[in-house]
Length: 224
Image 1 (cartoon, rainbow, N blue to C red):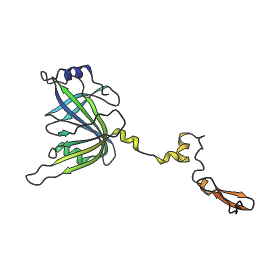
Image 2 (spheres, rainbow, N blue to C red):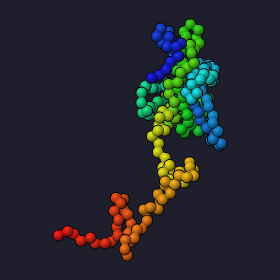
Image 3 (tube, helix red, strand yellow):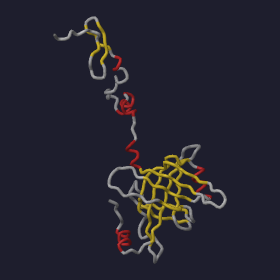
Image 4 (spheres, rainbow, N blue to C red):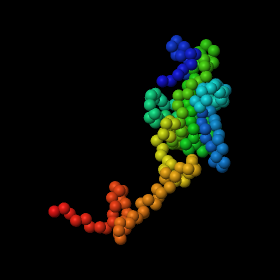
């Protein structure tokens, strides 16, 4: 269930609001990998807007650039489980700032946060800090360069942060990785060699197969 502030809840119930979307991108520089963050929103002008940070659950003020930079955010499914959600974000293909961010920084698996801000139609101010609707990563970038008379676009396909729960890490099943966590943990110390162990049965030798049956090369007479 999404938790809304009393101010946002009141504005929604009275149907007196103007909704706008805010996008926060956490990319990295190509040369050093240093974190670079930038914001866009779906209105004109540049604004310093308060948003509810999903990591700290506190209000932070961030700068967002408008003037047609953020064109559209797809519908974001609301679910009560940990399934991976997807969202597409359409940005302006002709805006110089969008171009510099998309082409000038590494957006592969860049962090993405999408907020919804509710404005009072009387004051044109946010009734409360914009609340977060989506947290995830950039999965794919599609840049369409149009021919004459056609429209271009930049579309970011994003997956929610729950995607991380689907990743596997085989390193956790190695002896070295266990030793890094605890010097006394030797549970996996024989993982790579146990398949080659040989056991002696009288004068014969053999190995254990995956079922734990000893292959010793001894003929067992059948019952008659």
